[in-house]
Length: 311
Image (cartoon, rainbow, N blue to C red):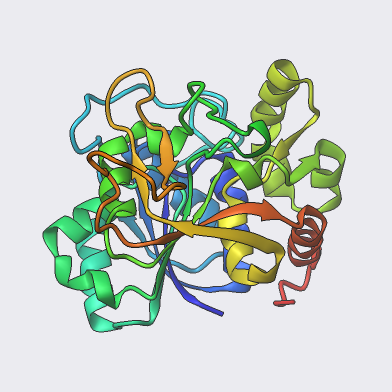
């Protein structure tokens, strides 16, 4: 069991990941960021979801826009409010600052805190920019984001870019090229772990069943699949079952401009004869293979256990 700071732009698949994390890890706090929704809505969503699911974790308000780019519109496939428009949300969008919380927590508990980032990486980049001394003190950073083209799994917002990275490519490039100990869980593996709408009902989790409806409708319309990929949930699956993943290792960069903006790139060849954009960068780990059945089984056993016990 890890001590987590859970960094999220909370939409539907983020909520599935948060429910999974609450049953398998120790949640120190939930830090919100823009992305699927505006950051104020993310604060409200995190508080609402925690109340509905009886998750005890404080919520913090993070960055509202990218480091360098102009803000772009939130995603709509999660419903107008990001949680399927399933519930009235009475909560305030005010909360203590997320970046300060990240910095202070890591300094207070060196080598003990794992960061899980399943939205744009703006909060993480801001924290290491403001306090570079925390970089060696982070136990691990697990990111759901990126796409590396394995078996044709390329971008989901452009032909090249995955949504979380595309939203703030400058932040992602800073984080992935830093000395943080990183594991990236990209679309290459998340697209392989699918659940159908009937299986979601079998979890016997009424809140999850309620919020997922617009997301399922979008998936059926756009992809012809009556279900969803467990995208963000796989960041937690890595913590629960690392043996289910096959990793590659090497330096990583993110393209920040042009038609490939937001594309994640890993160094494959050492034969570059001219300027090397990966020069002196640390190796990072990327999951490019997964035992989908093993991951699905653990997720279902965990979420369908009505006692709330930890498997």
